[in-house]
Amino acid sequence: MIITDVSAENVLKYAELELKDLPESGIIAIDGLNESGKSTVGETVCFALFGRTFSLDVEELDKLIRWGESRCSVTLRFRPGDGEHYEISRFLDREGNQGARLNLVGQEKPMARGMEAVEIKLYELLGYGFEEFIESFYLAQREITTPHPHSYAIKAMAGISTLEYLSDDYEGEIGLEQGAVEEIQQEASGLEQELEELAVDPQLLPAMEAERDGLVEEDTSALADVEALETVSTAYQESLPSIRSAVGRRRWARFLGFLSFLTAADFMVNWGFITRMPDHDLTRLLTSLISGWIPGWNEQYVPWLLYGGIAFAFLFLLFWMRSAALTRRMTMLRESAESLADGIRSLHRQRSTEPVSSDSTPDASSDESPTQEAADEPTVDSTVDVALRPDADEAERLCQRIVVFNAETSEVMDLVSREKAWTNLESRHRQGLIEDLEKRIQQESERCRKAEGLQQGNEGLQEKIAGKERVIHLRELARELLDGATRQISHRFNHDLRDLVGRTLPLFTEERYEHLQIDDELTVRVFSKEKRDFMDLEEISSGTQRQIMLAVRLALSQELVRGSVEGKQFIFLDEPFAFFDRERTRRSLQVLPGLSDEITQIWIVSQEFPEGHDFDLSVSCSREKAAITA
Image (cartoon, rainbow, N blue to C red):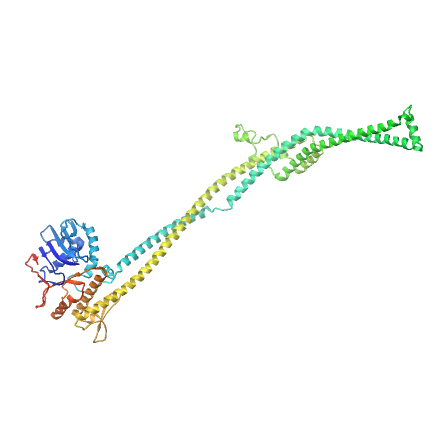
């Protein structure tokens, strides 16, 4: 940017400061004795642009106001790289109130109003801020020293400030993510501790459920067996009279059938001998016997033997059929006896004969009315002594008698009643075990659900940790890339800075010094032709040191122009020739206007300038004057 006009009221020494139509190129010389207000011009320019100055902290800005006044104001017009003409105005009062306004010259409507808005817009127009300005285009009245290599301004000039901002942001994010990972890990450790304390056995719940299901199945099977036993017992009791009656009738049918068979055979044999062998001795014997048994017997009755044999044969057939029918009837009735015997044997094979715990024995003397749940349970005859449950041998003996229908109804009823009582008591005991298992299963299910929830929570936390570790890895990788880019850019910046200083230094030192070494810490060493080696600055004169540092400062300014500034640029040098002899000062004044095509407007403050040197604008300051007009 090039400054065209500066106007101020009540700033430091001056009640009025008016610099109009300033030259856009060349040297603007400001001279005067000490405390004549020379540096006030630079402070005014600095305050106009950035709302602060080099010499005053932000908390001390009220010292900028002229003694005895309540407020100060400044207006500065400039042309940045876009060619437009801008005007920035600021005011400050003793209460610390400060205002700022930026607009195009000739337009009332501001482009930006307020400190922050103006600062943002001005940075867009200029390409630099206060820190870069102080380290490059504004040399305040001070010793010219090597700039700090890690200052923001130097980093901005080198183009690495943004990279370092990003790197710092990533470092902050890494710290936050690492802190979050630690917190999540602590939370995960808590969940893992809870899981360990729960100590859930994954096999326990299925085992208990299987045990419960087995008890339920066993109880259902036992009750079904008892019910089936009662059914076949009833069938046995009902069929016992019938089968015993059938046994007697079949016995008589078989006996009568046997007699009928013998009679039929006798009749048929006699008829056969008489009709087929009438002259046989046996036939004559049979005829005499029959005649003796049956008076009036003669040959005309011989056919009746045949008829009688046929009749008795028919009777034999009838009795055989009756016997067969009774046998089938007995076989059908015998199935109930075999079923009863099988049922009794099954109860003894499938269930333990250990007595049920006395805790599960129903209390017959209890006066409490039975609940609906108790009413739904199988009825138990409390008069039955469960210790008299038939053992296996007794049961087997009874089964053998049942099969042959020798067991009496009373015996069967007694055994079935005792089996039923025992089974009901076992069922009550099993129901107690099932209820206890149900409670334990419910508790274990709750523990399993809690463990599953803790496990899912832990898995979710592990996923979060993995995600954050990926973020950390990416941020660390990005930082490595940024650090590599920063080192590369910084190295190139130092190389370019060295080249720029190498071109300007000979002009300041009358070709005595040409080559510099500038490392990453901006430590400067100069090559001596006489010693044929690089020397530290302490080895050369103070005047030469300041010439070298001035060359470095101008090179930094040139770097900032190349990297950030568009168009022409001004530079303000406050007492740059302190400790210079006249010849060095004259030489520097001759060299400065031609150092750069971009830095064209050069403001120089000095107590006095060599005689005979013409400037594009000269401003003289006096201790007695409270106003400057040029």
